[in-house]
Amino acid sequence: MVQAKKVALYAVVVFVLYTIINSPSRAADLVGVGFEGISSAAHGVGEFMTELVN
Image 1 (cartoon, rainbow, N blue to C red):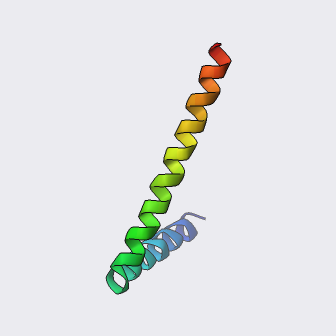
Image 2 (image 1 turned 90 degrees about the horizontal axis):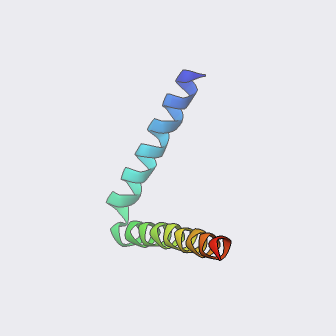
Image 3 (image 1 turned 90 degrees about the vertical axis):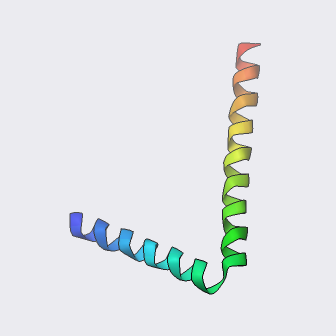
């Protein structure tokens, strides 16, 4: 099981590096989408906590 996790991690790292090298603008778009999703999730949690306190 541990070796499967290592192989999966290496595969993800290789894919990320391949994407960055071959298409930096696409990689930047994907990172932007990821941060936008995290920001939306944090905003939603903030709204929830605000309503919970009120």
